[in-house]
Amino acid sequence: MSVSADTIFALSSGAPPAAIGVIRISGPSAFDALKTLIKKDLFARRPSLCRLLDRLGRELDHALVIKFPGPATATGEDLVELHCHGGRAVIAAIEQALQSCDGLRKATPGEFTRRAFTNGRIDLSEAEGLADLLSAETELQRASAVEMAGGAFSKLAESWRSEVLRLSALVEAALDFSDEDDVSVLPVHFGTSLSSIFDELDTWLRRPRAERLGEGVRVVLAGPPNAGKSTLFNALTESEAAITSPIAGTTRDVIQRSVSISGIPFLFIDTAGLRVQTNDEIEQIGIDRAHDELQRSDIVLWLGQQGCGPDGAWEIAPQSDTDGFVAKEAGAFEVSAVSGEGIDGLRGSIVARARELLPKPGDAALNARQHGLVGEAAAALRRARETNDPLLIGEELRTARTAFDRLIGRAATEDMLDALFGRFCIGK
Image 1 (cartoon, rainbow, N blue to C red):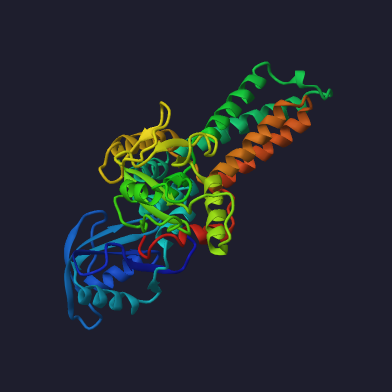
Image 2: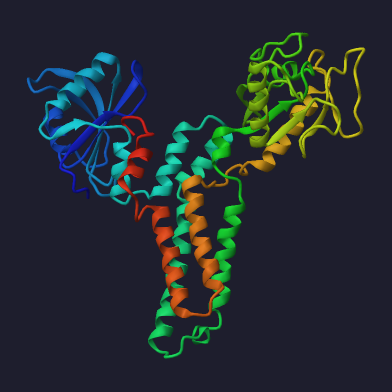
């Protein structure tokens, strides 16, 4: 149970008006507050239809009420749910009645989930997955977040930690019963076990990162002025975000558009026309920014002369419906943003490439914090493999265990927790 003396409450359903409003109460005074509202006791974990009354006995609403004794609850504390009508006045009246109860206060953003973490109902990786689930905007984001929030990665991290702890025990036992600082005192299978867990971590480090799911695959359109970049940009994003004109140099800054295609997040980026030099200071700034975007791109669509684009760029032969069309060699995409020729094929190829860059549907994906800690553990295990000194091996295994503790939240700073749970809404 939580050591907090506060009992919190908040609306956990959508903003009113709505058909139903769900108000949650969590903490040591939750059941006392419920009795104040309904003037009677209820059986645990059994829905009951009750009249909610204020302190003067005036009826507030009829609600479906459920009480959940801790610690086997979502927060690890005594918990109450009031399923009431979702009108603004109804919600406000019930919240006012709860506010007047001793020891109750309104919850802050993410406080219910933070209490679940503090009370051991979820670990840090599951909490991060839940935060990602709440902010998911595409099917890939949702599937990855569900996997992380469901605890699949947490169980794996726990297994890594347990294996490292077992190996640490073998090292300690060897040191206790040997006077020789020689790796030969360790069991024969020790090196194999160490390599096996290192290989697992290394595999995870090579997987696509979770940030791609939020930021989207970056597709940059580049080429000389008046090459048709903005027209193609509008066609691919099915928008009119970029101004198009036959006048060269119309696009003088970076234009971005986030879209979802086949459930995959993309960030399409239109850039200023690239040329060797210009006397226009503003245009030069746009060109410099275009070069910056090329450095950060996942896919570059090159609309300029064949072979003059960045390494790995896709050759695009634009304006295929015009009399002045210039074809490129085999392998290039011939497109017309005006007639639509080749657009579907290009878009399909972009989606196929994105699927290779992003986590597979349903796979858990590491965020920056998790990736960094898995990297720390892997580096420690790699160093342990490279030494014959059991003392050094034991120290590296301790470093790996510390990284795993931080990964699943056994050791976490308040600032980091504040930042994480601040991503949640009030009532979650």
